[in-house]
Image (cartoon, rainbow, N blue to C red; front, side, top):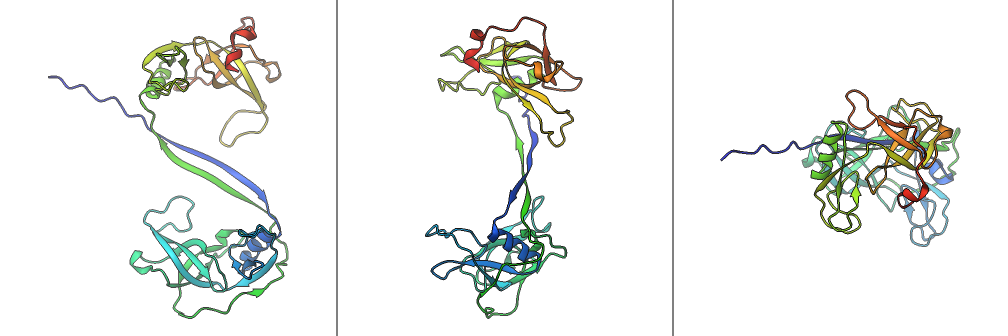
Amino acid sequence: MTSVPSPEVLRAPLVVEFPFTRSLGPVQSAFLTGLRERTVLGVRTGDGRTLVPPVEYDPVTAEEIRDLVEVATTGTVTTWAWNHAPRRGQPLDTPFAWVLVRLDGADTALLHALDVPGPDAVRTGMRVRVRWAAERVGAITDIACFEAYDAETAEPGSVPHTGVFDDPVTGIVAAARLDYTYSPGRAQSAYINALSERRTVGERCPSCRKVYVPPRGACPTCGVATAERVEVGPRGTVTTYCIVNIKAKNLDIEVPYVYAHIALDGADLALHGRIAGIPYDEVRMGLRVEPVWTEGGRPPDHYRPTGEPDADYDTYKELV
């Protein structure tokens, strides 16, 4: 008996990242500006509860709340979880505990990191205090972390605060990032491997007979497994498109450029690709295009016009 080698399992590290910019209302502005000034502010509700971090509307009554109060920088751990392998962008680069801390004078808990030597040094009910960042800019990271605090008694409760500071923080930019490893299944592995040979391969549904590109291993309409491979293209038709005017980070393409849905000949699902080789304002629905491959690239770099007459709308209207 001869053994059959297992097919290569494809994997690729992927990152989705973008900066999220938002303006701040008076409550969040006072909270973040206060952190810059080593002051922790909460907000007091109509029934006397103090919420930290503060919110602009009462989560129980939905009433707008603006009564700011200052709370202590010491507090009590209400619950915790150990982080044995910190990730990029987290508060500490050594193992630490994620903790919910109810600051003295507050009725809710604040999530942050606790710097302790190990999980045996953490417990619910332990006393902690804020460790401020050396440089503060008006962000939650102005609290570098929490640290253990010897005092057993709570500090005095909250006191009213005007929320007025010089040079208040009015907006923030938060970096949203997701790192993950993608591993395609059988159908997409075949599709990706075919691209390395400059071919585009889809799969046909045994029920409705539609050819899907890229394939997913099952028909999204009928819900049945697909296995019959069908080579499509390489030429196709622009079904719809958009003009991109904002330059993407780490993408060396000058704006404006056109991104389009392209129905490859023989496919029943349009895929997307960049259109080049034609002025952006001359791209149109029905334009016939072909792929342009670059050395070492797996998918086509872009699509360009073939010079054929435009496709009739009736031939691609179901794919718009």
